[in-house]
Length: 213
Image (tube, rainbow, N blue to C red; front, side, top):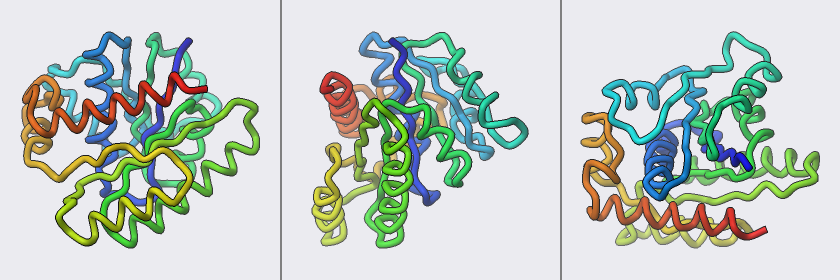
């Protein structure tokens, strides 16, 4: 059965594309048949994929010039067991991507603005949940985190009180910048590195959430 994982957040600049690409790569390396949909007009995931070194295909499918129903049909037609959607931080993109999702990843960095945006994102997800018979699962992803700082520790505490799954944190690391520059995932470019270990923990959380019904 096809699974759709949407990576979304009401605020930009939280590392959605990094989480989407690296999580997709980790799942692909574990034997999942993965494809990624780049629905963000900024095309960050598509640019990442241009060298042709990623473990999965990337489909550039922005919603700007098509209807939501046509876009959703196109996403559903992708031949892959797991489809990861990297979204833009606007209501139309988010609503369309959330409506398709079995699982939603919500990255959040240690910022008051990000936490407010996360609450807004969860409100949008809760609205979608009321119209679905199946359960939409959510994983909150503390991203670009430094646990040594007060802000980092506070973010984990705040997210833990929201009633959703909280993934192990992903730190701010230059490894992710280097991977983008080389057009590779951290799993292939720096296997075993601390950044890769954190992404593997995120993949563990995704697989666990998918197993739990």
